[in-house]
View 1 (cartoon, one colour):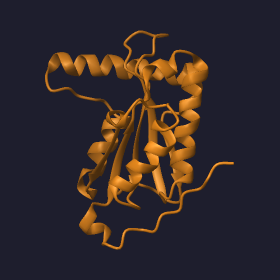
View 2 (cartoon, one colour):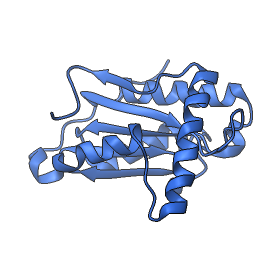
View 3 (cartoon, one colour):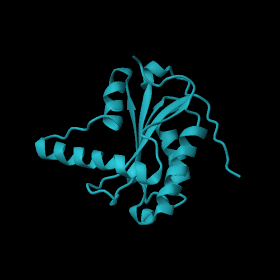
Length: 171
């Protein structure tokens, strides 16, 4: 039976802490060598974003390959409405993903505070066209992003998952 985590909201005002968190979970590639491992990771991410104390979350699954049928570097990006400190969210990710061996170590997990004015930029990063620091990096990112569509199709994944009540994004 899975334990539902209920954390008390941080007593500081959310305006002082940043309104949203940008979460990236990179599993250990050796755990995702077969379809079963990838689907297990997807299932655990979906459970995490639904059962944790986020009142709303948007998340996507991506990979780093450029050729259809080759999907190395599967990972998950999520944007959540802030409910807790990044360190508490990171501890819960560690409990669910690192302690169970899905992720190799703390370097595979990133939790970053983003302000309301950064929200749409961050959302475009995970759902829109990525751009690199230079033309070549931009081309590489766009090739990988094009392959994401094949990856999601092959694994029966939606382009974006939304949990909770209401909308995450500001108009």
